[in-house]
Structure formats: structure tokens, C-alpha cells
Image 1 (cartoon, rainbow over the protein chains, first blue to last red):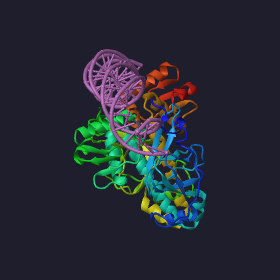
Image 2 (cartoon, chains in turn purple, green, cyan, blue; image 1 turned 45 degrees about the vertical axis):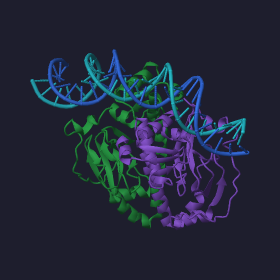
Image 3 (cartoon, chains in turn blue, purple, cyan, orange; image 1 turned 30 degrees about the vertical axis):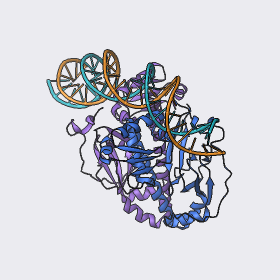
Image 4 (tube, each protein chain N blue to C red; image 1 turned 120 degrees about the vertical axis):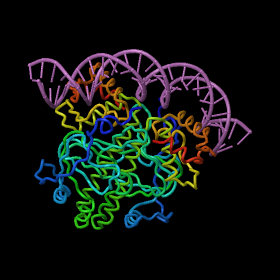
Length: 236
Length: 236
DNA sequence: CGATTCATTGACTAGAATCAAATACCGTGG
DNA sequence: CCACGGTATTTGATTCTAGTCAATGAATCG
């Protein structure tokens, strides 16, 4: 059982709070309609170095976050010290959509990242006048729900291999994947915490997949899906 | 590895399609505001016998379902025959909130159940005139998302004991639990498929919990949480 | 070019899955 | 009310996967 060593707890200041320094919203180019315009208008873009806390578990659930560049993950530290990652968020993704009431997942950057931060209340105020925006928000939340349900299925896959393969496919669909090559911004530990496995198992399983020719580990964080059909047959 | 034997596949017609017979919306008494009124107005209540399919995986994701009485579960049959339960839905719960696009989870009744069925399109049409309703729907979806995220955490608990205890607490919060006694409408197999465990492990774990005095299995589907603090200490 | 973090590999163990069988429960009909 | 058949659940023995502990090797950053 590993405790959450790999970030703040004993590596000193790797995870650190960062004083938000809003920048002008001169932008990368994500636009999803009126909601997006509203978010840019009332939100502020904040730059964070890698491995920096964006949201603490104790924070109020009153904000919405949109990743403009880099990668972010949400997570929760369990009572025994393990970390469970709730999700990875890549440029264009929004997190913080879950219910206002109750629990908040913490969030930290995986790489250097720029995040657009918006108060839900401000958005709701605009939403009262623009029904279209509320509908857009609903659509986003419904999509996130579908994704969460997929994760439930992925985690219910009992074998490590199924989980890893499922993860690779998910990433190849979402991340900056040129053809069959997937660029993984996260560490092995992050992957392990996402899939409910250990770092050793992730490593061994990836090796096994490479060994049987299904993938190629070009670089540590760069994996090529050599044989998609073989991978599919290993999946749930 | 168990296949999905315990329902339709070999018990003949236990899971069967049911010709919907809409009833008058004379009602149990769930009311969540304007959304609820609209749903009753444009929806139809359908009665299903136990272990009956309500939604097929191949169905379009164009409807919303509200449980009026009884219990329903959503699920997916994996390619190897295992069944993963997406969630249990008790009276007052709504399912089908996930994105319009893409996948649908199948749904079947666990007990005899009455379900209010509504076309999303019809609701959206009303929603265009009533922003409040869209907001209510958003709130519901956000809550469901939060619940799905909780499930991710539950499934990431590695030990069977943690999962079972988490499940019992979840049910005691939601189900018709009088004091410390929880009434479980679902079978052991359902619980196993929900938690990604086997039926044997569920059985053994419950026995162990009873043995150490944390719970009492009054009847097969009636469990009393004897020692909540002991249970809490076993949880994640 | 070191120092440090990150990843891989190896040996061993624990816990859940699997396979197999026995027992408890439930509704039905006598 | 009780016997019966079928299902659901429990119990037992064994196997196997992934976790744990320990150490080595590779990559990255200052």
C-alpha cells in the first residue's frame, strides 16, 4: 500500500499553493459558443507551474475551471494515504461541474498549465438571462457524467491489462495523439492512481504489452499503439 | 470469471421485454418542483414486473426515467459476459441523465417497479420556455455526476471489505433504512456486479462483518448496522 | 556532470477469483 | 401446514493476480 509520497508530503514544496496572477484573456482558441464567451468575459486566466494545487479539498465548490493549456488532474487523498485520481483534464476540458453541495475533489497541475477560473454564481447570473448558456452547461455536465460512468466501467475491469488498455484508448481519443502515438502528460504514478493499481503493476503491464507487440514505448511518456486490434481483443 | 447467468441468459424469460402500458399519473408523491410537474405532465408511468428490461443497450438515449416505486439498476454486459452495474435507482431517483450522444446503459428492474418515462425532447421543448426547469435539470445532472465520482472512489478501494462497507453506508443513506436497519432490494449477485467483486466474496465479507459484530444479517436482504464506528474505521 | 526523481525489475505474499459442493430460502401445490 | 423443486446463498479448497518490499537502472534538472 503506497501512501501519497510522490507529491507534496515529503518532496518538500513540489505541490505548493500559488498566488493567482490573473492574466489578460488573450487566448489559445477554445470556443464552445456563448458559454465560452461568457466564461472568458467573467473569468480570469491563471498560470500554474507543474505539480501545483489548483483546488484544495477544503475549498468551496463555487468555481468552474477550464484548462487552456497543459494538463490537470482532480484527486482525493484517502484516509490511508492512497491517492485516487478522479480524472485527467486536457486543454478544452472543464472541471468542477459536479454538484454545488457536498464534496470537492482537489485538483493539481500535472504540467505547467493555464486555467480559466470562473465563479459559478457569476455564470448563473448570466445564465438567468441566457437560457442557451444554461443548456450548454447542462450538455457539458451530462457529457462529464457519461465520462464518469465510463470510468466506473473501466475500474470494474478486474484485470490490470484491461484497465491499462482502456486507459490507452481513452487517451488516444483525447490527448494530442498523432496517428497512433499517444503523448501522456502524466507520470506512471498518476496512471496507477487513476486506475487503482500500483506503479509497479502499471510498469509491468506496459512492458508485457510491448513485449507482445501491441504497443511500443517510444519514450517514457510517449506510447505508440502498434496493434489496435490486438489491444481491442485484450479490452473489456 | 462469472458470466451473466443470473438473469436472462439461462433462466428462461426472467428478463423479458414488457409492453409498456401507460397508466394514469395518479401518484406516489414525489415532487421536486416545476421539473417534476412537467415530467408528470408529458411523461407516462409504466409498471414493470421484477427483472424486466426497461432500457436496452441498443436503445436511443432520448428518454429520461424516474423511479416512482420499486428499484431499478443500470448495467452493461462486458464482452466476456460479466455484468457491471452502473447504479441502483430507488424511488425518486432519475436515470438516463448522461449525455444524449453515445452510449446508453441498459436498465432493468430489480423488484416490481413503476417508472415515469419522459422524452428528453419534450422536456427540452418546455425547457426552452422555462429556464428554471433547465436549471433544475442541470442541478440533478450535477448531483448524479457527484454520485458517479463517489462511485469511482468506492471502486478504487482495493479491499473487498472497504467496498462492502462503503456500499452499506451508501444504501443506509438512500434506501428505506429505519434507524440502523437497511433494506436491500438487490441480490448478492447485484451487489457483486455493482462493486466489481464476486458473489462469493460478497458473502464471505458480509459474514466476516457479522462475525466481528459490526453488522447483523437479520434476513438475507435486511442488514442492521450494529456498530457504525467500527464500520467507519474499516472504510476508506 | 552529479543529484534527485522516476521507472523498471525481482522475489515473495496476501487476498480475491475460481471451481466445486452443500445448505438455506421461497413460492407452489398437495 | 408441510413436502417439493428451484433458486439464491453460503462454505470449502485451491489457484492466480496484483500488491508489497527491496534494489537497481534510466532520465531529467539544475
